Image (cartoon, rainbow, N blue to C red; front, side, top):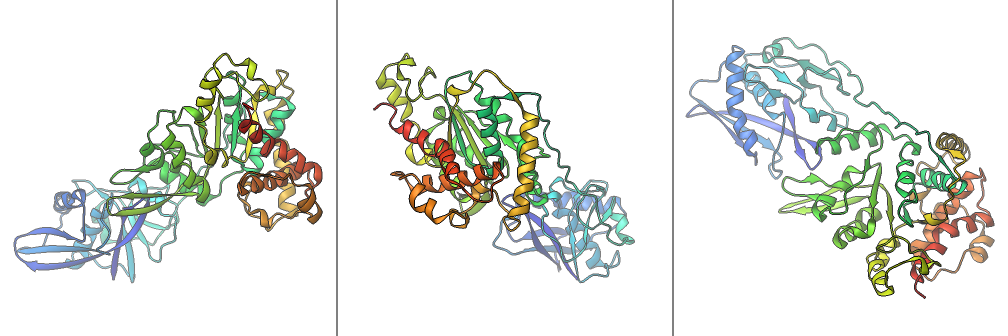
Length: 473
C-alpha cells in the first residue's frame, strides 16, 4: 500500500508520497526530501501522540521518512498524522487499510487527537484513493474521519461530506441611479469590462463601483473554492466574488504577492472578483505597471529565490480618479480647475498610456444627474433578463463579453468595414469597442450588433480616451 499526504505548494495542496524505513541506530525520526523546520519539529508531537494512545515506537531503530518528489521544498499542516499512520502500519500495531493507495492529512495533538487542517478546502481535484483526516463535517470530499489515533484500529468506509461552499449574493442596497448610471452598471456587470471612472470628488464614483459587486454573475463552485483558498491564506473568508480595494500607499510586493514562503498579493485575492483602485493616480507607478501582466493574462508570475510560480489573478479591474489635484478638471472644462496647467499636466501624466489602454470603458462622472430614478433592484432585474436571453441565443458561449476574443464575436461585414471608427490607438481599443458593442446589443436583447450599438460603445470605449489624450489641446 502506498501512503500519500499533502504539502503546500504555492496556494495549493500537492500530493507527496511517504516512504518509511527502519535502520539500526539511535531512536528518532529523520525526515528526507527538503522538509521544513515545522515538519522536523513534528517528531516530538508524533512521539507524544503515539505514547498517549498506547502505541510504541520501534526499539533501537531510527525511523527514516522520505518525502517524494525530492525537488520540492516541503511545508505542510497535516503531514505529521500521515507519518504517525505510516509508523503504525509499518510496525503492525494497527491493520493495514484494504486499499492500494491512501491519502492521510491531519494535525496531531499531544494526547493523540486528530484534527482536520483548515486548508483541506484547497483540494479542488478528485483523489484516486480514500482520504483519512480529522473530524470535520464540512469537508467536500469522501473521507474517513477519526478523532484519535486509536480510531485507526477499525476504520469505517469513506463518507461523502457536505459542501464547504455557501454562495451568498451580497445585499442589493436600496439606492437609485440615473439612466446613464444604470446603463453603465448593466454594461459593466454583464460584460465584466474593465472600467475607469473619472471626474470631480463627491460625484458618486465609489458608490457606483461598490454597487456592481452584487450585480455580477454567480461564481462557479470551482472559482469560489479557489477564491476561498487564496483569501484564507491571509485570514479572509469569502462567500461571493471578492471585492478588494487596496489603499493607494500599497507596495508592489503587497499588490502582486511574493515573499518566502510565497503569500498571495491583492491581485490574487481579487481572483474571480473585483479589484478596485480608488484614487488610481495616487498609486505608486511600479504598482500600476505591475498590473499589466495579470490584466493581460489572468495570472501573475512570481519569482522568489529558486521558486517560480504562476498564481491566479483574473479579476474585473475598476478604478476611479480625479484628473487633477483639485478634482475639477474634466475634458472641455479646463477653466473649472483652479491649479496651473503645468501642475495638471504633471498630475495626469501619472496615468500611463499602456495602463490607460487596458481599460475598456472610461466614464466621466461630471455629467451624472442628481435625479435618481432607477433603483438598483430594477437594474439587477433587467440584468437577470439579459443573462437569460444570452443563455438562450448563445448557449455555446461560456464566458463574459469582456473576455471574448473579438474574432469570435459576430459582426456584419458592412459594419466591420465601414462603420467602425478609424482608431489611431492600439489594437486593444478596437478590441474593447467590439466587446462593449456586443454587450450593448445584449442589453437591448438583439442577436446582432447594429450600427447604433457601435456608436453607443464608442461613446464609452473610444471618444473619452481621445478626450483625455487631447485634454490640454
